[in-house]
Structure formats: C-alpha cells, structure tokens
Image (cartoon, rainbow, N blue to C red):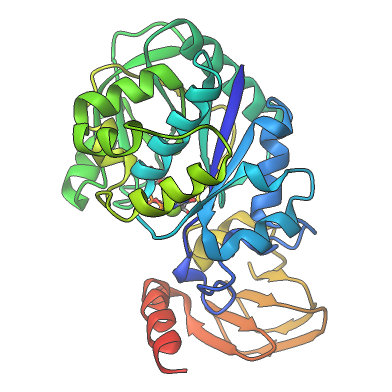
Length: 351
Ligand code: GDD
Ligand code: MG
C-alpha cells in the first residue's frame, strides 16, 4: 500500500512579508493559481495515493490552517509537532506510525512548497520509484539535472556504469561548498536531490536504527496505537527530546543503499522570490506579476506580488522585489534576496 507524508512545518522566511511564522509560504497561493502550494502538493500526490493515506506533518500552530485548506482529510491525518526539529525526526516518526498500521507500506516523503508543473510526468516517475522500493531494500531519491553550482541543495552521484533507469548512488552530499559543487557539476554524473524520497517503512526504520539509534529508540520504544490521545501525548513529550537534524545528514549521507531515478519533470524548490520570478511566465521586460493589473513602463526583471487584485504602476525600476500586503509594503533589490530571511526575524521580534 502506498502512503505519503507531506512536510509542511517550515517557515519559508525568504518569502517575507508574504510568508510569516503564523502563515508560512506553503499555505499561500504563491503562483496566483487559486491553490496554495500545500493544496497543489496534495492534489499532485492524490493522483497516486488515496487521500486517507496522506499524512501532513506540521507544527501544532498550523492545524487550523491545514484543515481549512484540505477539507478532504481528517484531523487524525495531521501529525502535530510541538517544536521544529528539522526533517529527520518527523520522517522517522511518521514511518513508525505508518508501520504500526501497515508493516508492508511503501511511503513517499515530499516537501510542501515545490513547483512541479507536469503532474503526469511526476506521477510516472514516482510510480517507478514505488515499484522499485516495494521490491528492494532501497532508499529512492529523485534526481534533477543541475544547472549551476547551487550550494543549497543535496548532490547525488549516480553510478557512471548504470544502464537502467534507476541507478545506484555512489555518494550523497548535502549542501557542499561552492568549489565542491562546481567540481560535481563538471563530473557530469551528479544530480540535485529534489528532496522527495520513496522507501518502504521497513527499510527507512532499519536505516534509522543503524545510523540514528538514539532517535530510533526515542520514537520506537512504546509508540502507542495509531491515532489515539496516548499517541498525541507520546509525540508531545518525545519530540522535543529529539536531535535537530535533517534526513539528508542523518541518513542519506550515511546509507549505502541509496538509489536514484532521474526526474523527467521540471522542478524548482521555490526557495526565494527570484526562484518564483524564474518559474513564472513573465511579460515583456521579464517582469513577473502575481495578481494585480500591471501597468509597467521602463521596468525589467521585477518580481511583483500583490495580495489582492489592484492596478500596479511601476516606472523606472529594474530587478526589484515588490510585495504589497495589507499591512506591509516591501521594495527590495532582487540581488539581496537572501537577506530577507533576516528581515523576518527582525520584524517579528520588534513588532
Ligand atoms: N514538518 C516539518 N517539521 N517540516 C519541516 C521541518 C520540521 O521541523 N523543517 C523543514 N520542514 C519542511 C520544509 O517546510 C520543506 O518543505 C522541507 O521540509 C525541506 O526542508 P528545507 O529546510 O526546505 O530543506 P532544504 O531546502 O534546506 O534542503 C532539502 O531540500 C533540497 C531541495 O529543495 C534537502 O533535502 C536537499 O538535499 C534538497 O536538495
Ligand atoms: Mg527547501
């Protein structure tokens, strides 16, 4: 049986002022399509996985948001974390939880905030990964053709000699430095990790038992019955005791049974305003506009985002991020977009 776990506990701080800690980017309609990124992720997965087998992992403060955006799921499918501990603990916990209900389950883990347009190609690739992970004791990743030495991604070294669609991974390296990333790109057989994983619940729990024995013991010893109040209490007490580490460092870099399938779909992790700009259809002058009726003169390369439909007049500005919200207006150079993260912290601490 197929299951999915959608990780929706991040804050997306580089998308401030739209993304805030009380209303993070995955709950926003960032692309102006009428659906939030979480809703898009859910419907993409729902084509392969029955909705009752899709779990949402998020912070307890986002329960209402999650339920209101996904009326097709029940409250028991939302696993609430009392604290942020990165992706390893939430993946282990959900794998153990599913395993208790169905020891033969195969699960997919997906971030809630990515851009994937071709849903059929995605479903096709994922189906092949499910087939592979169901029969073998392997940790499946989806690999993306890298285009520049991005240091914010994980890198997958695919076996040079592999002739099949699914190849063994010789090395998994999370967020290498710039020089290493450049070297990887030149090698030709390296892929970006899309952050989407497929494995059987048995295989991933074994990997944790071997590589993260303390965390494994914390969550596996005495995990109570699925969906009970006892389970809720168990999570609330044990979660905060867990190590804070991502699945990439905790498992993927260490395991020797990692495999990859090259993705046949276009992918973007929508990490910054600039990434959103790149993925949007832009008008003449390469401006991207989410909502609003643009009237642009002598303006190039701007990312313009409005919360409501309104007339937007811009003249004589290039390469800026312009965000209009009820209580905040941001006008910020695109080349400094990484600094927006700091703004969120500053503003949320002082206002
Ligand atoms: N539930 C929950 N709890 N979700 C979380 C938590 C948490 O504590 N922390 C992060 N997430 C969610 C984020 O919201 C996001 O959807 C996903 O987990 C991945 O976390 P990121 O923080 O965005 O990871 P990253 O971008 O630095 O790196 C990962 O993704 C890259 C591709 O986008 C890695 O897997 C890289 O190897 C990969 O290349
Ligand atoms: Mg990310």
